Amino acid sequence: MVPDPTIWYRIIPKRSLSNLVVSSSGIYTCLFFTTTYISLRKRMLHTIPAKVFFVATIVMYANCTTHVAINLYRLLQGYVYQRTTVGPENYFADLGRWDNIVHDALNALMTWMGDSLIIYRCYLVWDNNIYIVILPALLLIVSIVSNSVALHLFTQVPLGTIFGPSLVAWMRTIYATAFAQNALTTGLIAYRIWRQEMNSRRAGLRSKESSSDSLLPAIRIIVDSAALYMALLLCLIVLYAINHNGQFVMQEASVPAIGIVFCSISLRLSLRSYAIWKTSGGQVSVNLKWTEPTDLDTSIEDTPYRR
Image (cartoon, rainbow, N blue to C red):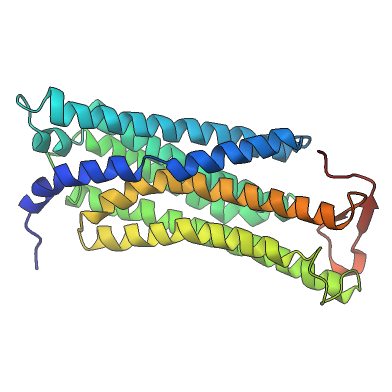
C-alpha cells in the first residue's frame, strides 16, 4: 500500500512542535554540568584521553545547544514570521532552506563526533591497536560520505520529498552504518574488558567473589548506555523503511541522546572509581595493563583519588 503523500504535509505542524520539546535537552544539560563539575572538581584531566573526552563533551553540548536554537528559529519563522507569506507547510517542506541544511548538518556532526569518540575509546581499550578499529573507521567514513551527499541532495529535491527515491538509499545507508558501527565497537569494548577480567581471575589476581575491583560493572555501564542510542537508531531504520513520519521525532531525539550516552558513561565510571577509592580507604589504586595471561602485569600505586 502506497502512503498518502499529503499526510506528510498535514503532520508537519505537530511534528515541528514535538521536535522542539524532544530536543529541549533537559536531561542532557543536567548530565553535562554534573559530568563537567566532577571532572574539574576531582582533577581527572591529567591524561590525554581524559582531556580529549572532556573537550569533546563540551563541543558536543555546544553543538546540541545550537541545534535547539536552530529549531526554535525555524519554529518562529514557520509559524510566526512567514505564516502568511510562505505558510508553515511549505516552509518546513522545503528541505533546501539554509536553516534546514544547518539543522541537519548539526545532527550529522553530532553523530560523527559520537561515533569518533566510541572508536577512540575502542582503540584505547585494545591497547592502541589500530587494526581493531579499521572496520569501524571505514563505517564512519561511509556515514560521513552518505550524510554529505544527502545534505547536498536536500538543496535539489522538490518540496517534501524526504522519502523520495533519490534520498532513500542514502538515508538508509546513514542509519544502517551508524547502527552497525556502534554495535561493533561496543561489542569489541565489552569483549576486551570481559576477557581481561577472565584473565585476571585465572591468574589469581582477582577472586570470583570479589566485586569491588571487578571490571564487569564497566561492561554493564558501557553496554547500557550504548543500548539507548542503538535502540533509537533501530527505531529510525524501521520508521524510515516504512515511510513513517515518526522518524522525524526520533531523528531530533538522537542529538541529545548521543550526548546523554557519553555523559552517562563518564559520570557512571567516575562514580564507580570514587566508590572503589573509598572502599580502599583512599590509599591505593589498581591499574591493569591490557596484556595476555602469559605476561599479565598489574601495578599497585600510591595514587589516591583526588579530592
